[in-house]
Every structure is written in structure tokens, then in C-alpha cells.
Image 1: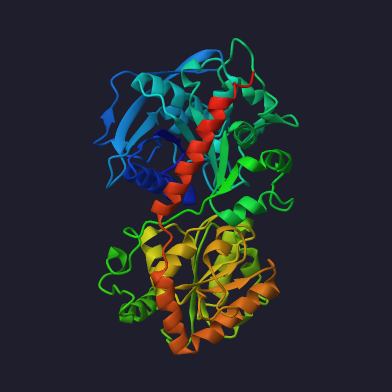
Image 2 (image 1 turned 180 degrees about the vertical axis):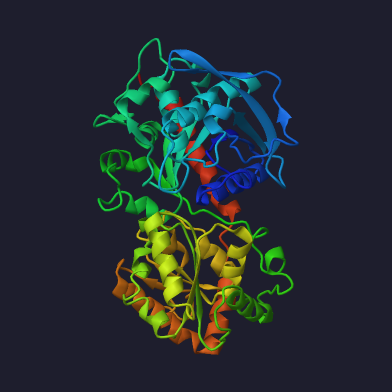
Length: 494
């Protein structure tokens, strides 16, 4: 099959979250299954043009009542021959941040920026004389492509193209004032705008959910959760109506990229499942780098996260709360790496200043340092209020760092509680997003740490687990086939 993936980000070019990891990994896995997969994304300010091929003709994209032009650059995913096409237009994408100047605000013209991405995808395919069988859309930034495909008369050459929308996080929907509908190309025949305007608000994700031939989420549990009122984020009516099209497919991870035996960030202390001596040395390295006492007798908990309410970080920011009691009393140490909402950043800074012997905080984004935390920690904290998939718990398992997680989304699909199932467990799980329940899970982890034999057994079991993209890619192929059957048996909406 011919598949075009439309994404706002992809590693190593641009990243704010797990979406950037998932798209290129899935594209590469699909390519290995012999499908013709290509990716389109914006060229942001920090993406170097060096070595990229420029498509000879500029791309004209109808937007509103006029045409906007851009240069298209072509490269490939590293280690793969998957083509990546980048839309190069400085006034839209030549900025420091992807979606806004910081993690708490958005660019005022985001409706235009990502409407352009969705619309340009059709024009690019035409210019390449390559009409895909599948438009695979990722999150709100490209969701309008499903709406354009189903409701516009501009794309008769895409009549046999089906759309699949993957929801990486339902909480981010791309909401804008209704008058921003004008950024999309005017259709001479008119179109059904009720699928993109909800309650007087333009909603990119709602448009995609309403019009996509198939919908996927990034874990089976999350696929069920979004049908519940507490998780539907105001889109329960659409999701309930289209629940027969929703499939949960767990994200995989790249075991070549994440490998403690040859990770350059860990040198010279690399380790593997047969010898864990390097992991113990990395714990000491991490403690020293963060100014913590080098005490091997107590467990070290790591956390790498966006500092937002979704991630449950508020359960830690109360320095006098039940979770922090374990660190206040000196029973354990905590290392935090992340950026996000300013209130949470300041709260964690104060924790680091108040408890310097047990808590160390770095408000930053650092890939090498995140590797050291994954490897040097004994346990990894993910108290998310919801987590569509999550990758850090998979990275932690790979590095023999047992996750402590809330039972939600992909965390529920990948982590088995050691207290409930000592023979198959690989971490610690709690149910309610409360300080008391989270504290109990941390307490169980601390107690488990003191039993060295059982700890080593669980660590080795975790390191042997595999969540590979090959298996997930095969499931996506089945979804693609279902989408094509649907589009071949139904006429477009008008």
C-alpha cells in the first residue's frame, strides 16, 4: 500500500512528546513490511536544511480565497529510506517553538499553520504524481485532512484514498474561534461545516474524528477509556457514535535506539541483562551529578516528564504530602527532569532547594541526561492522570528500572504489579490518582528494594520484555485494509 503520514513532528527533526517518536518508528516498520510509506511535516526553525534536496517546483496551496506558496525539501529518516517531505515557509514555521513560544502558550496563527499542513499534503501528492491509498493522520494538527478528503469537491483524484486518524492524546484538540474556518480553501460547491465547528468553536480533532474512515489510539486500554465521560474530553458524542471504528494499538519502541549495552550516554558503564554492575555505577554517577549523597542503601526514583496536570505531578509538588514523606524522611531519593507549566516548574525548584539531600531537580530538556536517569534510577515514576500510551515506562523496563505507575492507558497495558503478581510483575501499579494511593505504591517499591534477590529477578524480567513496532505495524495494516473497504463502499459526504 501507499501510505502518506501527515505529522507535525518527528524525531530527530522536531519533538515535543511521544508523537515524534511514534511516527518515524511506525513509518520505518511499515517500510520493512514492504509498503510505500512517506512522511510530510513542517520545516521548523531549528531543522537544518543542509543536505536536503529541494523539490524543483514550489508548491502552490489554496488557502482561503487565495493561494499560498512554499518550498518543499526532501530528506529521509535516519537509518531508513523512508522519504520525509518538509514544508519550508518561514512566516509559518520559522520560529523557536513548535506550537508556541513556551509550554504554556500557543502561537495565535496555529489554525493557519496546521490547516496549511493538512491542505498542502494533497497538493504535494499531486505534484509527485503519487496518490496514496491511505492518509495516516496524527493528532489534531493533521486531523482536518480527513475532513477535507470527505467533504471537499477539490480532490476527485483522491476518491479511492482512505483516512486513518491516530489519537495520541485526546486532550489536545486544536480549538480556535469559528471565524478561523476561513483559513481553509473555499470550496465552490460548499461543504458540511458541522463536523468541524462545534458549539461555535472550530475544532480540528473533532473534524478528524467525525470524518476519518478508521480511528486508532496508541494503546488498547486508552481506546476503551476515551468512551468514558471522565476521559472523553467533551467529544463523547462523536466517539460513542463511531466506536465501531476505534482500535487501540500499543505503540512500540526502538530497541536498537534504546539499548543499555551500547548507549553512548552511559559509557563506560554500559550493562546488559547478564551483568548489572554498570547499572550500579550509573546510579552513583547520577547521584554525584545531581549533588545527592552516594548512598547505595536506599532506592533512587527518577522522573522525566512534561510538568503538566495530566502527568500527575501535582501529587509530588506538595512537599508536605504523603508521597513526599518518603523523601523528607530520607528513605529514598528523587531526581526530576522536565519542563512545562511555570507553576509546576517553580514548585519543583523549591523542592530541590528545600530537600537537597534527597531531591534533585533539573528544569530542562536533555536527551543524554534522560538516558542517565533511565539507567541510574532504581524506580521510575509515572503517576499520570491519563496516559494514552507512554514510552518512558517502556524505556525504563528496557533499562531495568522498575516503573511505578497509575493504572491507566498504555501504562495499564505494559506494567504488571509485583505485589499482585510476584512471578510476572515488572513494576508497581496504583489505581486512584490520589497522594495516598501513590504513596502506598512508592512504599511498596521501597520495601521491594530491600530484597536484593527478588529485585534482581524482577529487573532482569523487565529487561527481557519487548514491545516492538513490527507487531504494531501489522495491526495497522489491518486497520488500513478496513479503512479502504469503508471508503470503497461509501460515497463522499456533501
